[in-house]
Image 1 (cartoon, rainbow, N blue to C red):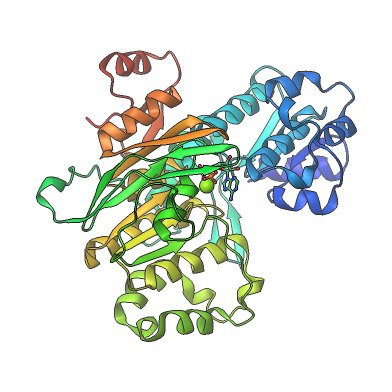
Image 2 (image 1 turned 30 degrees about the vertical axis):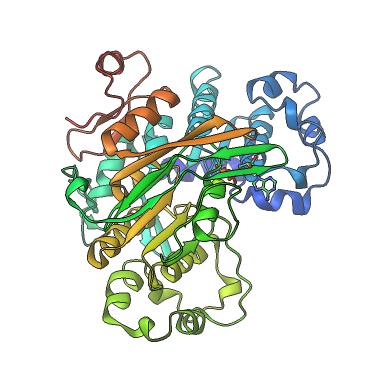
Length: 447
Ligand SMILES: Nc1ncnc2c1ncn2[C@@H]1O[C@H](COP(=O)(O)OP(=O)(O)O)[C@@H](O)[C@H]1O
Ligand SMILES: [Mg+2]
């Protein structure tokens, strides 16, 4: 688009100043040594306001290389906002953040434009957040690793709907061979489905964190979404189910085979993707099922000859999801599979997980923060809460409607569905629908 071109030209001419939040906050500690306080002081000596706004007081005197991904992300966004510039550029601000944190930074980024009249650009793959954050959006399409084309900007609602449709009417370009549908699924009648496991309440105590989960049932073919703030024990819970750590109280069923994708994936293998997958999955790798239902939708074709330790974040994630889904198991545990994936890959990944569970009549438990991903993947919802970093607990599994209501009531947001695509959209706080839905207790509108 010409708007982008003008902008890039003025940046190149140095007639405007730019503040930039980089995509990979994980690499900040590699180039920057010091405390969070020093990072902010380098941008501006007067940073007490932003510290308060972002609640950074607790981490101000921590070394940059010792804080969590979510804390690092918030510090990096705060530093970018602190800088006095004409244009602000945020590359994937939601990574590592939970929903509450995503909404909070989205509101703050908006104030740069609304109150200070700045020009703000954001690259974001969480479409619920993008929808909430932006006025206009550019769609970028093209071929992975080959080329990208910027389409003209559109109001964000139609940009996202166009994106989902796979077809740019204005330019008569089909950039995906199918549209992405949000089917408003009839609830599964899980009471009529065979149970796979009854799980007991599990308890785990760390030095400064105490976790207790609810007892529950997992049915065959059911996908349970796990939602909740950061540091409330989601990963701890999944690790106990996976047998990676032992609970202090409560037992895990022993005869259930579990396949597990950790939240933080490492790429230590020095073989290529194909060899790694073949070695791990054995004969299953060549099965029609794996190739058609896992490798194809996750677009492994492009990656198969690459070295595992040279994959980008998103490539590694797709390989890790494939490795998890390719195993022979009863329960598949995936901790934050949408991280590093673009919007399209997220939705393909969600549908892949569902299809594999349905076809194999196996069960999935999926931790994630992306509402579109959760909407597509889940039959039921477990809600985590407590006091982050101190105490965690879980509720459910509940059916989608109840689970999302419990969760969104706590997050203090309501969603409606888009009339055209049925995708969930965050209601503006205090709008007529927001007030009505709160009155009805329907935070996640199902119709
Ligand atoms: N091995 C451990 N030793 C001590 N504390 C831990 C350990 N693992 C996790 N924690 C703490 O437990 C809390 C919950 O962590 P986690 O289960 O990763 O949360 P979530 O996945 O919901 O973000 C955090 O405060 C974390 O620092
Ligand atoms: Mg986690």
